[in-house]
Amino acid sequence: MDKTESDRQRQALIEGFVNMSEVDGMDTGKGEDFLFTGQSGKGQDYVDMDAEDDSGIRLGNAELKENTNIYKSAFHIFKANVGTGVFMLPTFYPDAGYVVGVILGIFIGSVVIDCTQLLIHVKVTINRRDVTTYSQVCRYVCGKGLGWFLFVAMCLTQFGFCLMYSQLFAETMGELVTFNGSKYLWVSLILMMAFPMTCFSDNLSLLAMASVIATVGVFYALICCLVETCKVLAQKGIHPSINPAGNRIPVGWFNNLANNMMVLEGIAIVLPVHAACTQKKLVPMMVTCVIICVIVWYLIFGLTGYLAHGTTMTTSLIAAVEHSPWGTSIRAFFLVNVIFTYPLQFMSAMQLIDQLVGCKPRSWIGMGLRLLINLIVWALAMAMPTSAVNVVVGLIGALPSACMVMIIPSLLALHVDYAVEHPDENRNTAAYWKRIFVKKPCFTLVRVRAFIYFVIALLIMVIGTYSIFSGL
Image (cartoon, rainbow, N blue to C red; front, side, top):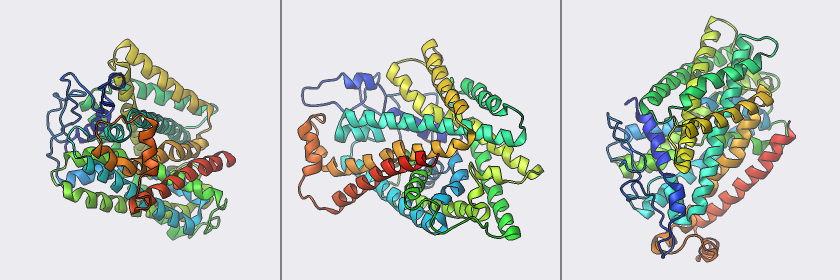
């Protein structure tokens, strides 16, 4: 694997937001120019995901060449869906139990797969080389309003992950070295380690090394945790606190759905992967197969952890690992993953803000913005107990993730045909938006699915959020 691939896929996501402020001020006289302009004035939004030399990548001007085979594309999809959140899967099951939890996991996984297929279908229907990223698709079909909505959702999600990493770091360090007030020291420590790295969000080579280190750490910890869980089940049997339907029926089920939505939030990378793949006809089936494998892995990992530890686990599976030299090594690799994943998640949203403000990462304004956002994350982590990490995860899943994974793809699928037929119509008028919901025929398979997903997403957002706060 090219060590810069992980950063190139993130770069492809960022491209869609390039020069937002310039785009918003454009007026073509025919509606809205949905393209993003770079120095050349042409709306290119492509990044070479597999080239050896990344020195030529420039925001807004790079071109994503179709030179990624189906196997590398599959790895991109897999890596986008497997991260630190997997260690928290066993903590999702107390809300739904070992029977309903599995059913809900399969259900939300199926919804995510279908919404991903809808998004691919939208891009294929548009069929333009200058409309390849999630944000460009949003702006082409529904105008700048939806593009800004996606921008906000993406920032909330990525910075929310950073808050989650701060809490997990403090919790895990507290298990290794604890004393009065140790939590505040560990939260401050990750700030001091992560802030300098966030100032180099334009250095793809540096971030590529961070990505490789984080990947090694997460896979070592995952495999060891699964082995440790199987040992606990073999020695002690099933934990007596488990139940088949959860502790809070049915409100807790929506919290479970929100949590599962958070860990299956790799949808944004799908369109850049599709654009770069040389075997585009295989991408939809490949995406389905990869996400199914991820769902099966998540079900096994989460269910075995719940069966072994029941409701005694409150933060992550790492906390349940025995205190031994092997357990210490697992925690150490997990901490390495957290430390080096923090700037990677931070970078994805921060570069969008850099593009919007028009500053360089290491300018006074750029560094000031990074310090401000890091301090906000630090302050929230200091104010919240480390055990509240599940609250952060649930809120990410219930609010921005539900929008990015379910609402936006469904909305795009409803109106893409009309948008393609009327490319010059203003996307920001009430009449245009009205057609999204009253278009005939009213009852097609795509429209029925889209409206069902609207309802499910709204229920997750409302009841899931209520469930999170009611459980505090």
